[in-house]
Length: 341
Image (tube, rainbow, N blue to C red; front, side):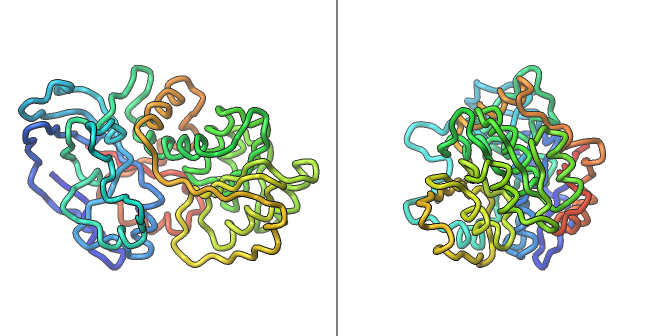
């Protein structure tokens, strides 16, 4: 099989690797689509991924082989590559302990597990989730990032009718605004400087879209929320200063939910916002129930992948280097997806 192997120093190489063989309790997935995640782009941009890593965790595919003792899957089953319920007593992410440090974990992550920038993936039989009828393989590849936003919304204090701001209209931000609406948000405002992403937010029904490069985002948000500020701000931008901006614009006793992973030191000036007794909640990854909710939101049409993903979004594995370089400073890109086969 072919795979995009990260070699370090912002370089991928397309290499031939042995096809995986399932052992007892394992399945092989032929990957159909793998969306390029912002976290993978950060691992590339900051050269965090160890050389030899095969990344890619937002994917859909088809079961192509099952190991001894596997009864829940058959060859030909359509699946999402993750989100399964781990066996009793086994954590889905055993390394995430009480003192977990994702930055250090990323820098020392093992390289042995081949993920979905390869044509085939080996999983334990409990790891995949079935794709329901009414959800295409293309849509299912976006289940994992949708689950991340479901997790953030479920951790938040969002209530029916609340005003919400989403900072950043990348894939996570565009999914977050839809999930917030599905969770009962009454008004959704988006801040995004990239024209293509701002237009995607408009098409998805944002009540207002702000360009923070040409407008005072904080002042405009306060104006749009009747002078008090939004109830909840989802920080999905990971840009310098956006966390402080979120804390500045939220209303008294409001909440900021940090969804994006900020890889650089970010400035904060607490005297500007601490007197309003705001709360900051971090959200990281997702749980199995978030994946199931995400698939149901996609199936029901409450979350749509259009215009996040279009025919222009797809690329062959051979073009992954250029895709990652483009996504380091997105202008016309919203979501890019590797299409295998």
